[in-house]
Length: 322
Image (tube, rainbow, N blue to C red; front, top):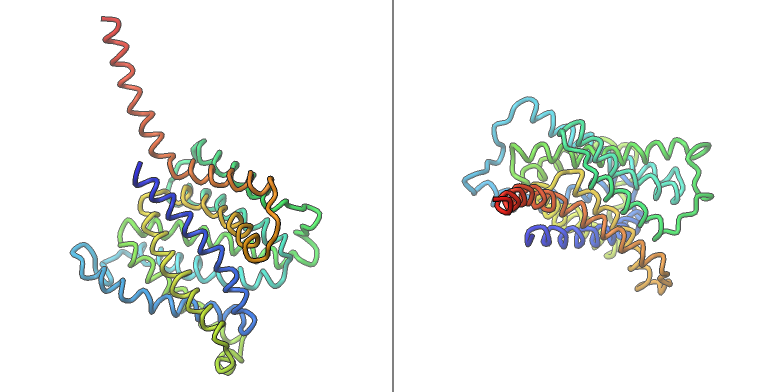
């Protein structure tokens, strides 16, 4: 129970930081394109992960590059190149070719797609509790955002951008699921480092489409450098270390329900920074999202307790009959 509570608190902390990260991304994009931002963020992250990787290597149970099968190397490629690089680049390109309302709606598919991919790739179970947790969290997000369906336009001029955003959400799901698969053969730090490095290398060729990337570096402001350091060292490193260590204990489908906490913290940040009003709908929605996250996190523990209580009850009944 203590471990589950710790996992829940750490997931909440991660989502708080990831929610704040959108402001840093938006600010940094004022001075650079999405590919340049992706390269900077992942590059700083790879450098920040090196000390952790070396410390991990010194442990008896880990190696810098353990002996892996061809299937494992293919999984690394899928996680780093298709998953991570695909996710970040497609999100960035899609956001510029679609509406914010479209992006908000499509991003809700990430946990659902993660569950589906995890069932196919990892054989995870599609339990009733997980479906319920997804439904509760989605309902909470819709209440928080006070979603206006008339602002959504999934076809027409925004169809291409929406397709890019959807493929980005699929890349997100693939990255989490294949990273979970690799945790069976490598440490969480090793999986994170090599995935980030592959994502960085896969992003570099796309700098061709942003030819002024190097020339513009001299004009970066102090706030831009601070945003990049935050994204690289905190957003893509510290929080991901926590996320991957929790991922060793939870199924991929369970852990991604916590993604629905980001709009909760976005509303709170807007209330504090921008003095926006918090409605009862937002409060109720936030509690629903937190309930859905807790249900997904504690599902295994509650199922195990229920399973162990059945034989005890049977023994007690037998004793009563005798």
